[in-house]
Length: 249
Image 1 (cartoon, rainbow, N blue to C red):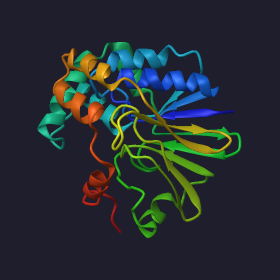
Image 2 (spheres, rainbow, N blue to C red):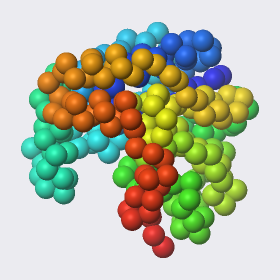
Image 3 (tube, rainbow, N blue to C red):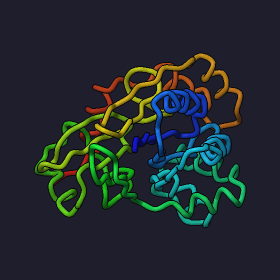
Image 4 (cartoon, rainbow, N blue to C red):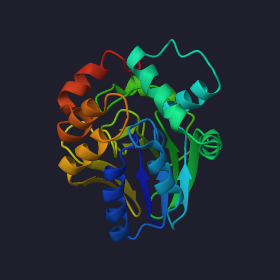
C-alpha cells in the first residue's frame, strides 16, 4: 500500500489540485490529510474536493481546524492574535453544518500499516499535542520525552510547514511540509509513503493561484497570495523564528 500524506493545505485549492494530479501519477492507494485544512481562502472548496476523492481519505485534526470549531462553539479565542481571530471568524462563517460535523469527527492521531515501513503514526504537530513546535534543528534530548511512548516504526507530522526526515531516539520522524503555505521554494510540499518515505515537491502556476486567491473575500487575501504562494518566507528565516517558540527541556 502506498499512502500520500497531505498536511497544512490551508484552503489553498490550486495547490491541492496540483498535488492531487501528482498523486494520481504516483499510484497512491490511500491519502492521509494531516490537519489545518480549512483555515485559508477557499475552505469549503478545499474540503469538498477532498471528500469527493475516489480513493480512501483519512483526516486528522490540526490546531487551526480546532480553533474553527471553537469559534463555532462560542469559545473564547483571546489567546490568538487579532488577525488570526479575524481569519478564524471568517472561515467559521463559511462552514455549512455538514462540514462542521465533518471537522468535529476528526481524531488527533491515526495509525496505518504501510508497505516497507510498518506501523506509521500520523499526528499534526506531536503525538501528544496539536500545537507543539519542533524542527529539524531541535535537540534530540528535548524530543525524547515527546516520543518515548510512541509504539510505531515511523511518525509523520506537519504543523511547522517545513519538510524534514530525522530520527529521535531511533524513531524515524518525518515532516510532510505544507501543501498550501510552504516555507522556502514556491510550490506544494507533501509526503509519499511506501515502500520508503519520500519528501515530494509539486510545482504549479502560482501566478494564477494568486489571482484566484485575491478574487475571494478572504481577509488578507493579497497577503496570503504574496507570502504563502508567490514568495514564501525563506526556510532559514523560519527556522530562526521557530527557535523562540519550540519545545524546551
